[in-house]
Structures are given as C-alpha cells and as structure tokens.
Image (cartoon, rainbow, N blue to C red; front, side):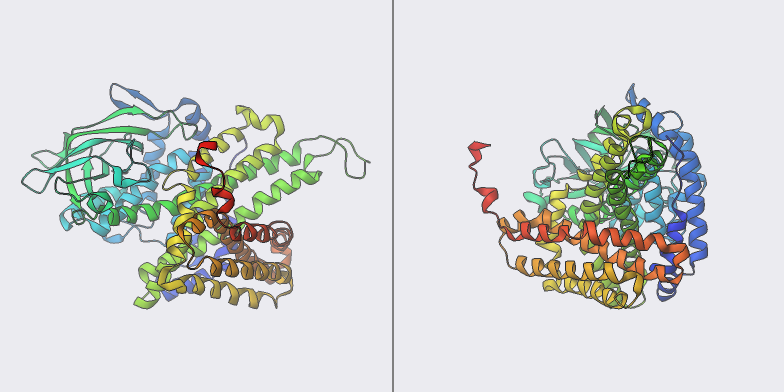
Length: 581
C-alpha cells in the first residue's frame, strides 16, 4: 500500500476560494484565519500520514485481544495515542474553559476525515471521547463537569457510549438496564450492553462510560430512560482515580472490520454512576452525543473513500493491461480504459464535493455556537440538524460504494489482503450501520427534519442553494454544472412538496431514495461553487471544472430516477404478503 497524501491543497482551496473562511470567522468573532487553519491541517496530516497510517494494516491483522479481563490493543496503538494527546489534538475544537483549544469545528471535522482515511479504528477513540465530552458539558452538573471534563478534553481520559442492548437496538424503549439510587448522589447501575466501541483499552487513564438505564420509578417507553456517568475508575480517599468500578468486559465482538477497535460487551454489576441531566430525560442528553457522532460517522465514509481513491488512482496509472482505444498501443495503463476512469471519477467527485459540504456544515455549527445574534445561531443550528442525517447516511453509503469501486479498479489484486483495498471495504461497512442505521436516518430526514418549523428550515436551505446557483450561472466555468444542479433542485423541491402531509407508509417507502436525491443536489451545489471559484485561476483549478462537468453529465441525471422512485408510493413494497418472504 502506498503512503497517504493529506489533501491539504484541497482544504486550502476550499477555505480561501469556496467557503470564505476568513469572513465566516470574522462574523463570529473567531481570531483564526485561513493561513493558521491550513498550518493546523498540515500538522494534522503529518500525524495521520506518518503515525496512524503505518498502523492501519498491522492493527487490522493483529486485532484486539481480551486477556484476563483486560483489553490489549494492537502494537503501536498506545504509543500513537500518547503522541496524539501530547500534540494537543484531543482538545482541538473543545471549549477553552475546560482546557480545549477552541478552534473552529471545520478543522475538527477535516482532522476526522484524515484519521478515518488513515486509521478508522484509531479515530474512534478520540471521536467517542468528544461525543461524551459534549454530552457532559451540555447536561451534567457543575461538579461532574469540573471533575470529568478537563481530563476528557485533554485526552488523559477517554469516553464511551453504552446505549445498545441485545434486545434493544434502535428501539431504546426496550432497554432493561437499571439504575437504583443509593441514598446519596450516586446510583447502582446494573445491566449488559453490547457493541460498545472503545469500551476498554490499554492506553492508561480512566474510561468514562455514559450509560442509558431506567430508575425504579421510571415510566415505560423512551420517556423513562435516564443517562448515567459510569467511570472505569473511582476516586480513592486521596482523590486519585485508582478504585476499580464494578464493571467489566464480558467479551469482544468478532466483527467484519475495524478489527483494531475494541468493540465490547460490557457488564455493569451495581457499578457506581451519577445522573447526567434530568431523571427520565436521558434521550435528550444522549442525542447531544449522537448528533455529533453522526456527523463524524458520515466523515468516516468520506475519509475511507478518499484514501481508497488515492490508492486506486495510483495503481491505475501504473498497471499495464490491454490496448489503447485506437488499438495502436499495447499494453497501456488501465487509467486509459473508460470503465476505470468512470469508477475513479465517481469516487473523486463524491470525495471532493463531500469534503466541501462537510466544511460548509461545520461552519454552520460554528455559527450555531458562536454567532453574536441569537436568531442567526438558531438558523444555523436548524441547518445542521437538517443536514446531519444527509451527511451521516449519504456519506457513509457513498463511502462504502466508493471503497468497492476503488477495489474494483485493482481487479483480482483488490480482493487479496496485500493491497489493502479489501480492508477499506470491510471497515467502511460499519458506518452505514452504527449511530443509527441509514434507513433510520432517512426516516429522520423525511418525518422530522423536513417538517421543522413547518418546512421553513428545508425551504431556507433550498433558497441558499438557489441563490448560489443563480450567481454561478453567470460564471463561464460553472455554467454547465449550475444548469444541471438547478434542474435537480427543482426535482428535489417537487419531491419535497409531494411528501408534505404524507402518511407514515408513504414516507417510509420514499425515505431512502429521497435522502439520496437530497445528497446529490447538495453535492451538485458544492460542485457549482467550486467550478465558479475555479475562475480565479484556471491554470491552478481547471481540474475542478472538469470534475464538475463530469458530475453534471454522469451523476446528477440520477435525480430523475430517484424522484420517480420517491413518487411511486408504498404499494409495490406492501403488495407481497409477509408469509411470502
């Protein structure tokens, strides 16, 4: 496998020419400019390329082991985590009040992309810690915040989410874990959780689990779920966290991919825990974690797609096979063959537009957190909520599809372990499943997010896109993609109108196709912005226009087929009787 090349030049183009990063930071009072942002990303890229990438294949081959009740991660992982923490990367975007650097979230999201590209298993450790940190910061008591946030933000401690049970996956109303008050401010938490990523490891330091459980007086269903902070180690009489809590790893999950990530069955046997947030309001606190994690999961698909593209493009340029199209040369690099180019362009046009859309979404999150006007904060927060299922499901779907296409470029060599492509496929698959399956994300989009503020949020997003398309239609390099995206936006708007007021069966039948349609239009919007920005220097950015035109001609036409599927209704899905399956 070839070395990883961090996409810093693309980040620079997006920050300076497409996303107007400096103006965005000035508007929210952030003393960060594009020069500093690029410098941070360059250093992040070095860490990912030189430290994380070399451990990816060896970590996959070695995997994690459970020995004497303790997890042992693959060789090199504890050292790499220490380097990550010592470099200050754990608190990159965290609140300075708790020891973080407070840098813009766009840098965090693009760091996540590079970590996912180079070592997805490793990236889950800091990613889950960040989710736990955000939930504690938003919902925990001041005492819990003062104790747990500084070491979590610094990376000295790590975090894990303990939500899923064997009988309660997506339907959390069925969970059975219990939390019994002890008479002081603690609870005894008892139950078993499965699929707990980063549930235990050998990096040292505490591991803070956020556990969903029910109190004895809890009402039934999701309205009776509370969230508890349950650390691996408790404080002793000196205040040092040396006392082992009554929680243990029951087993390690045997998984298709992310072998270097310890996905645990966790047992809690009257483990000491503290309530986070209000009683029976655990889902509100949990979704603070989940929404942050869902953006990260979408970026995992993007990162793997980008890494797989790099490998496939390099291979295609070197691998000699077959005759040239005119028959005059034999053999030629397979990059000359139309089908290989089609696959590579499919992947690249997703990766570069996805990177731009992720950046735009991250800037909205920064606006939601820091804009001085409360109304602007609310608008930005709503846009992030609207786009979260699109990024999570859309990026992870296309990330997996991209990994498969990149593998296909290698032919038989892609199917064997030597080239590393089959690991990309195996690792990418989980992103479509965890943090809410992609079918659930699609239902969230059509049944909840489209209806926010009676449809005003979705319409405001469409209006933003429309303004950009109209402006780009006057810029020569962007004319073709702007026209194609404008047509696709019209199709999306018609599909959106048709779903308003639809019943649950119609929404369920349309959801997945609608989300893909929404994603294709959003990526077309980004390609339009990039093609227009390329006009500043066609000698430098001419490739962007070629890629935008490919997307306009070969990808956006899928919008018509998706719209037809959305409008088809549920009848063909329900016609076959259940006992005929």
